[in-house]
Structures are given as structure tokens and as C-alpha cells.
Image (cartoon, rainbow, N blue to C red; front, side):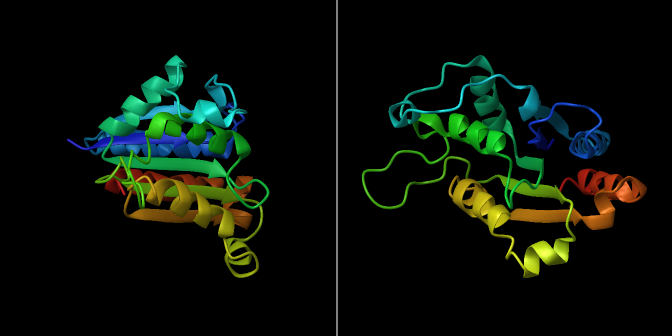
Length: 192
């Protein structure tokens, strides 16, 4: 049985947000396809933002972060769903990943050289919503914010492959949201 972790990275925990509907669609479809699915809403998780570099080397004490670390370790496939804010993931999602990474959780320990990723053997799907057309984000802006999240956090943690799906423009407007939800449901059914 495949174990999937779905992370709604929207700081706004409101169930009216498209990211919430997408996370629910993926979750339900993967479950119907036979996967064991866990779901985390970053916007509904209470944790402090790291302000002291020394804390990064210490084990987290927050129950929600410790439970999330366990969920990451037990997952075969991790799905991140978030809105594009200022060209990249929302700051709260990055702060969440910083908390998760504490005490070498994501990177592992090494005496020298490149740290081994502790989440090797897992795959990921990153689903991003945005107001602008996706072609504009890719061509005019180089999609650098999403690429940085995928490479500097996920790939460094050993997660491969990392596949990205972008929805923008009409696909995130109310008229196109139904088709977008169905596309995400299909991804969940295929567990990719």
C-alpha cells in the first residue's frame, strides 16, 4: 500500500480557498485508489518562526512539527499544494519547512561534502496556483521561486523525482476551478 502525505501550504486555513479544494480532491482520489493518505494544513498548524540560527541545530519541541516529521518519514509520495505569493511559496510554508528541517532532519549529518538527503526514496508532486497565466510565470519570470523550493528543499532532502503542476489564469478563476479540481483528482487517482 502506498503512503501519501498531502500538504496544503496555504497560510489561510479557510476551506473556501482553491488550495483546500485541491488538497481534498487529491486526498480523496488517492484514498479511493487504495493509498493510505495523511493531510497537513500548514495554515492551521501552530509553530514559531525560527529567528535564531542556533535553534536550527536543535530538535523541535512542537508536537505538530514532530508529528509532521513522522509523517514525512512514513510517506512514499509527498504532495505540496500552495498559492504563488511574490513569485514563490508563501513565507509560512518555507518557515514550516525550516522547522521540519531542524536537527538535520531533511539533510542528514555529514563530516564533509554534500549532506545526504534523509528522504531519499520518496517522490513529490508540487501543485501551485497563481493569478497570472502559467506561461507568463515560466517565460517572463523563469519560475524561479518554484524551482528554488523544488531544488533547494525537496531535492536536497533526497526527494526524487519532483514533478510540478502549475495552474494559473482562467484555471484558478471560479469558472475554471472545477476543471482544475478534476485534473488534481486525476493526479490523486494515479498517485503521481
